[in-house]
Image 1: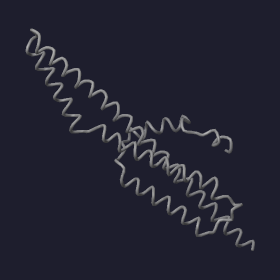
Image 2 (image 1 turned 135 degrees about the vertical axis):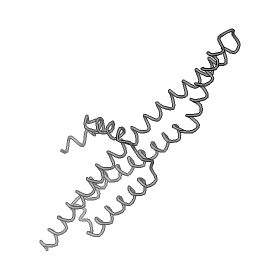
Image 3 (image 1 turned 90 degrees about the vertical axis):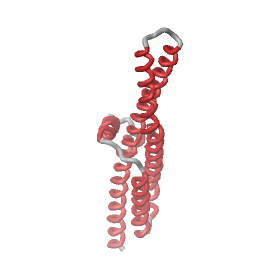
Length: 177
């Protein structure tokens, strides 16, 4: 009886350790996606502003006696900025990063709940359910990763700064630690 309890206790500890590692990995990747989305939103905004202002200047100078060079340069800037928005589609890329980050956050919440509720020794979980739990979460993360756009080192660094500064800590995380 004690040997079986020791085996279950060791398996429970291993499952907990695996889910905690997966939860941490999800946090870093999730926040890198949100950082990427933030950069893309700023890019979309500023390139859109440049395009709008340049197009407005070009249109206004056509109606005045401004130098043709001003009209031409403004029109060129507007065309380049509009072309960049059309070709790069920062808004679409931003949405893909947001979707990936949100899916990772939802999975991270599920893992946190499993760690705090489902893996309670009081529930006396079946050994195969512990392995299945870790496998299912890992498979879901792999699917999200496969469908998500890549993140940059810069996005990872931005995420790291916020994570290490404690921006994403729950009060309950520090209360139980």
